[in-house]
Amino acid sequence: MTKKKIVKADTPETAEKAVKVSKVVEDNVEKTTESAAEKPAAKVFKPTDENKKKATQFRIIAGILWAIAIGLEIFAIMQLRKTPINLGLIIGLLIVDAIFAIGGSLLWKQANRLDPASEKDKVRFFVQNQLGFIVGIIAFLPLIVLMLTNKDMDGKQKGIATTVAVIALAIVSAFGLDFNPASIEKYTEETALVESLMGDDAVFWTKSGRVYHLFDDCYTINSDRTDEIITGKVSQAYELRNIEEICKICLKRAQAGTTAHVEDGGHDHHH
Image: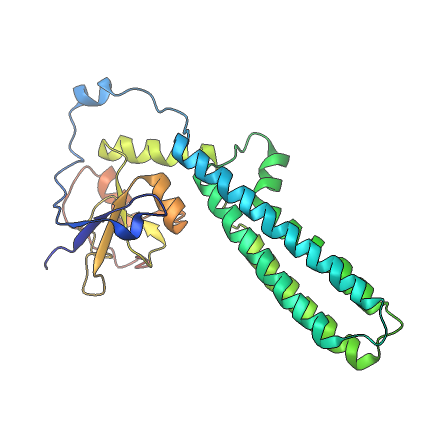
């Protein structure tokens, strides 16, 4: 089977402009004991200055979007005090509120992948990674309570408005929650594992993949279904695709110390 094109991953803004090149991965597994002994101990992951700068920019923009979302909530609350109540305006505000809240959450998540928190401080780690969910609750729950207790709204108005608000809250919360938060410890551990097995922090994945690979000729990605394979660092797999785990076939192959093509019928075939 012809090997697929390998695209070098870049930072989020320039990844799509990466130049396609043909690359054949050489044998990176069979390393001598001497060369392995010369390698320094794994260093704690530190984001690059460029990534820290981008993360700060994303967080500032996210904060602005969230502030607008909460401002829209306050404006909607003010509309509830007017009679007659403009139901169409309330629903419109709920929708726009959700859009700004989701936009902020997406940027905040991206910032956390560029500049992750440490798991050592449990409270900060939770708040930093789930802040989008917290903001979503703040931006909608008070409004829902006030709509349910509003005496100027009839049953039909309450039913429509609260239904839209609850759906918006659910969607915003789903975007705000991070089920696979990045962390300094996770980046450090996974990078060290890849370097210990392959001698270099270089992995492979696809645009729709859910795992990253140690070998570009792994049959789960080097197949007729794949047009392009992306290569980059472990941290970039998180930044660009939020990929959370290593391919079990590649891991087994690397641990066995062979570059032979291995097919495991029990693998889940995730790209």
